[in-house]
Length: 386
Image (cartoon, rainbow, N blue to C red; front, side, top):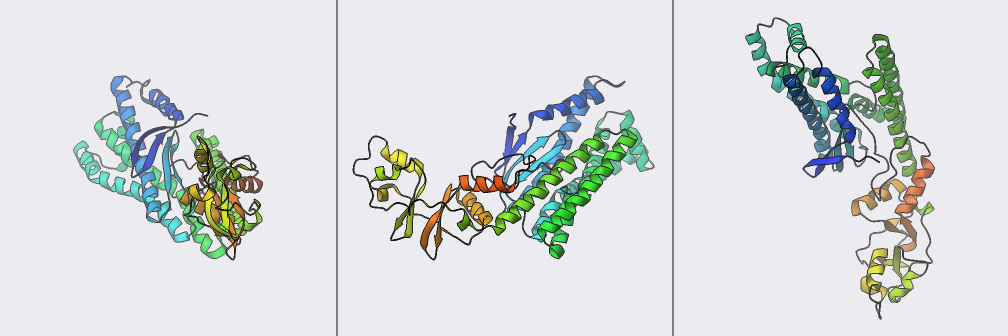
């Protein structure tokens, strides 16, 4: 599988570039390198414009990311694709207000950039003798200059703003629509409605693009249809996991292991994560890597208590699978002991979570199986801004 390359970090957020981004460089070559004004200066203009445009895309994604961080939601990375940027956050905000703020934070960045460009753009128009907005558009079709770069950058941010605010889920406008509907009909039904609206608009884009032979529009329409389906299904799976109780999926491991047992006793059935119990109550966890490390060079007379992790965190049998998985993710734990009224009832592992997730989401459209404890709900491509 082709992997993205990291080009930097901002506040702990990785900025990545996918190898397919090279396709945009090919487009720059055909757009500016082969025309009547082609040559080194035209290519330099195209490459500079490309860098500035995707700089704006990164800033747009950082707007989403910083707002997500403000609401306590972890941001994994930002990846640049040929069609735009993807901010990969830990989870979809459960509160409608948070989702609205996070969704609008990206377009707000484009508004700020466009407003900042207005004074130099107006000055350039006065110097060039422009009398209407059409003069600006005519100018960029005939010139490759710093002034044309300024005009292009302004209109790109306006287009990014308007496009992202379309109520076509999973675009930013579609997320705002979903958040507003959530307050009235619930999150799962609101997502279903927003997906239908988004896919209907995507079909319109496809028809429009084919009619006017603007073939980028059908590509965008297909993208919206697929990603809306994927995210709609992810929310459906999340809702199902919120309804499922973790006690249904806890594995009984003969009551765990006692702290006074020899360390070699922990290898019965092979190395694994196992709860340490005393009188039916969880007093620690014995992680498989600790067992193997403790046995390295001979266990001697070492006991389970000598190497167990006493900073144990338990969950209740009535906690939802979703909440337990989120807690495992926050604590970076591969397993959690499950209790009932303080008594040990079994262990819930990352492998069990993956099993539950696969049973709930057999669709071929989920793009990535969870890596360890990363959220299985949020690997969603949101090009052109989200």
